[in-house]
Image (cartoon, rainbow, N blue to C red; front, side, top):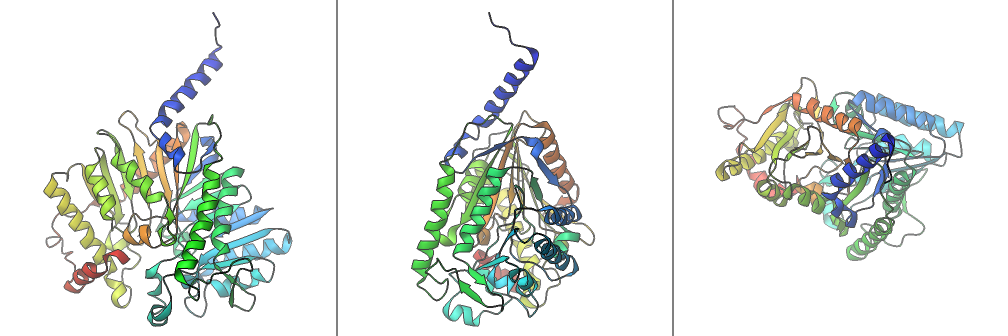
Length: 468
């Protein structure tokens, strides 16, 4: 008989534990690229300040490449300092390859904007691409004001990549996200394959985006034929969708054997281009959760799609749904119609709560609002914990909000992180605990709580729910 050493037996038990844990999620192998690594390579950042400090530190230390994909780059002091840090690094190291991908509409808002802030970087070889929605064209493009032209769809992925390490987040690159806007941020260290994939994904979207020139104009990439709003919409969507799909599928086909304690599956949602799997995977994950499992789902803006609502109702799991209290909503106090947005999300949450109560699920699915003096809430994602575990074994982290606009109109990226690593599970447990600590139960009666939305907000929600 062959006897194994204590170390070998421990290793074997660890692999068996990993395989048993992975069995529940092995269907993800058919859906997404798979990247295997140690949980010790993953760090959950806990605050806006730590997020910003890490961005600056990694910018200063980057040697080969920096890729930043976001909705926009702000123009406040901290965002300006981030741009200056990149500028200095390009001066010190001219061989550094810099790529920035932003949304055209948001990056072009106002006279001083993301574009004007990044122009000095283009003069030093940095590449700035601006995704323009194919839906924003013709009379709609001419009539919609700057503040509202984003509702038709935008570039919403958040990828902050430095050499072979990357932060995936829901946070944008502006001062509020660096100071008092609570979000999520996961740093994956020294993972070349995942970094190559995410770098390539940003590059793929940049191919069919408009390129920023040194004189603050935009042009098509030399190798791309279809303009997002001047060419045929059908031709642009077909070509762009195929471009993304082919890139993504080639990585899905590259599977290798998993021997580490953590696996990451990148998921995308680009329904506007006819591609994506994030919502499909998320729905299956929620709907298939058994009785006794615990799921925490967080969104900065509560507007679950009908499909997500049905999955939560049909699932056997216990749920905590975290969202922003109106006082923690970034639109609070905004001028004009935008000031009614917090009331709109309150109304949508109340309607969902009433539906839960009518079906007898109000004790299994709890809605909770985040409220912290002087802070806003933008955290999104999901934590999955089975009935035999005290800590999450899976998390979804990235840019999707689980709402209509996020699912149907925007370009989104989310990572599914599956792990048996005790340290990483502990980090995830602490992260979700800290977020829940700042929440209270959503009120059952909005009138008693003096939270009843105005009549005009009710009308807007009825007409425009799919744009939230």
